[in-house]
Image (cartoon, rainbow, N blue to C red; front, top):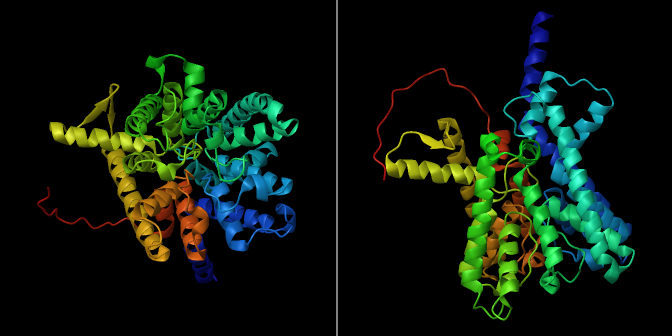
Length: 453
């Protein structure tokens, strides 16, 4: 009898899902529900429903707050379909486990140790202390920020759309704060017909930045209000975010300012506004103010780099994260200078963080390159390689910036891009940890010397 109990325990442990696997399954479940709803006749204007593959692609894109789409959301989706899309964006931005935890906690459910561990993994926290307070702050900040800008945008859209402007205001506020990049303006134009609307660009740009810096940084800035007292993480996020926005915006302006197909024929204020908005949007939002396919190859390369880096941890954005990129740069600089320690803002960055950063960067690069090669094979050389790479990085960084080829992929291309969006949303490290068996080795081997460099 005892042997049977032990055998049952071993069997349960063998088939017990890891926290990282449960996180991924929660997104898979949400994507599945969204796919089913979007295939219903009520979801489209023509009462035909979306094709299952297209529904899966759009549901994945919305749940992973990406923005790549194979349907014209503004013209082809019904009111019900738009509501489904909005709900997927909102839940995907916050995370289905975050919202589920809040409801369960409000109903008095007491979380066990393993459930707290899963929640800790989903929020990328090093400790379980204060998890529920963090979730409450996340929900509160989301409602306040989205609500405030929804009012501003509704007021802005009312003269053009009437009472429908309220729906436009709510949808675009949620889409921008969640860094999703979906819009309802139709014809796959994004913001190209509204590129001179500085108020709209200002509101959306602010929402993208707030959603991209992360909830812990927002809390720290609101309650500290003193640079010296800000946490080490907050300082790194602010510095890296501002640097990427400024450098990206200046590069886009300098490179494309003479390109008559994008910024060349615009006045200086519009050139600067669009350049910096594009730099902000590249960081995982996906709105575009000009035809990206007409931009120079160097500008597209700059955008690919920004998309690959992405937003900050515990935000609504994707990518390898700005802090990861910042640590990699500091690590390389310390090697060049012959320093054994990385010290910034009076704090030392641990070797473990450096190793994790390089691991994330390497795994993300391998995934993007592999996915790009497979997409090129699937594409059959129909499109230029740089467009395929752009599309791949846009999916991985959950950016959603299209370069005009998204709706031309066949079934296998859409499925591969859907998987890439999922990996980019949950994080490459989380995804790899969910599929690789982890075992600690008790055997210590002698070190070997290898010549490098």
